[in-house]
Image 1 (cartoon, protein in one colour):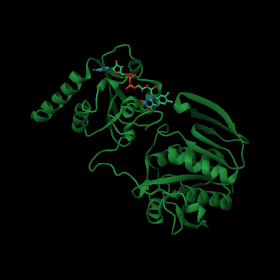
Image 2: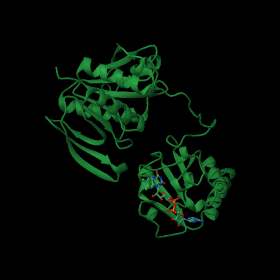
Image 3: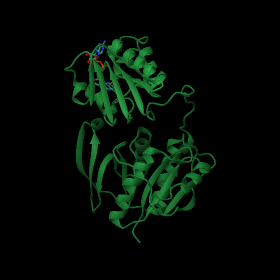
Image 4: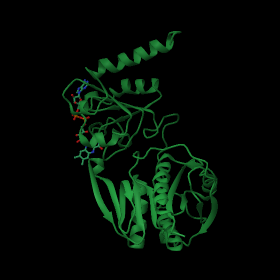
Length: 332
Ligand SMILES: Cc1cc2nc3c(=O)[nH]c(=O)nc-3n(C[C@H](O)[C@H](O)[C@H](O)COP(=O)(O)OP(=O)(O)OC[C@H]3O[C@@H](n4cnc5c(N)ncnc54)[C@H](O)[C@@H]3O)c2cc1C
């Protein structure tokens, strides 16, 4: 029997999150071309992990592994790296596939360091062979690199929002196996001590189906009230360019781009944003982009599906007024 392909799965509630669905898709394709079984390691707390393992029916996973260690939580990066490394040493997989988020890349880089093997981040395509041929995103997606990966176990992450997620098929729920790991005090020393909770009822930028982004053209933190109003009417979230987070008009956590968040909404409304490459890498996975800008020549026009050339302080309130008018009228 060929060595398995191991997919690292993280959770949203008690089911795999969106990134993990991308991981499963790519890992399944890889396992299929190798004729290898697909296994999944649930990176999360043991209780929900077991429930999520059950929800992997339809994904082609033969065995779901759930790590059992009383002191280990998701917030222990070294603890998880040690756990994954121990699973790799015990099960000798052909390849390990995770998601190329900051946390996912951080985890596999730590695993790579422990196992003394290379790791390839942000892959778009993977062709197995004696050496693996990879295409991967570099420089925040502004460059595609073709490369070879030559290692006894191939550690890969999938570039987020690049793999289409399909509905599951008829494959059965996996067998669930509990894995015991041995962790030292040092493995658990680094951990998250506090977390900023999002405001109640606020949609997160990465989950929002509509994002209204503001740039220097918004002019001030007060100017964002108009964007907040539009986002509220559309059930969306507000983000911004680096200029606005550097100016303190928005918190750093709202920044979209190379050094901020990658978003993939159905609609991104970019208001007073010029469209610098470092911003575009964060929003190019949006299905549609509407640019509102006074400058018809600004680079954002090159990626926008729709554009309104005009002052955002006139255009954004006009859109909000029209939405309000339509929702008040009986014809909708
Ligand atoms: C290493 C590195 C990393 C970076 N990471 C990021 C990142 O993660 N995210 C990011 O966003 N940037 C990032 N940047 C910065 C990036 O290069 C740009 O400087 C930044 O995105 C520009 O922000 P902006 O579009 O808001 O401002 P500007 O480029 O100044 O554009 C303002 C736009 O507003 C328009 N405008 C002005 N007034 C109005 C009005 N009243 N109505 C409508 N339109 C108006 C103008 O026509 C213009 O197009 C990074 C840069 C570097 C070097």
